[in-house]
Image 1 (cartoon, rainbow, N blue to C red):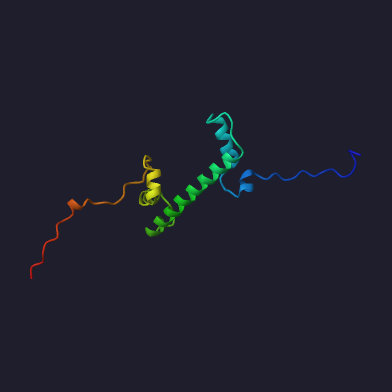
Image 2: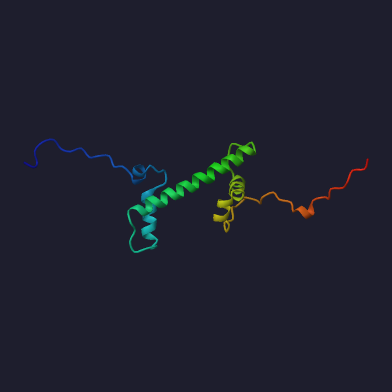
Length: 123
């Protein structure tokens, strides 16, 4: 007897990001993958995996940049802190070797040849 009984209440929709336990937008990344014509078809797991990887990389960089900011006795992360964090980490430095961070500056480094020579003390 269809049409009888109480009407079903509409369920609150749950996002793919919530289902995957991620902060990064899985649906938006899926749309970018489809619109970007990277492949003719995009699997259901691909945007979830990519969102998880991007979230992990962002968290890793932010953690290191936060440590760099704390080392400089600052509470706000600026591009300089991100630059220091990335260039001091071996793997991130390799990953982002071709990336220029605006207002990042350079790593403090003085070549050993330029340092003053150690002379023996006269006694």
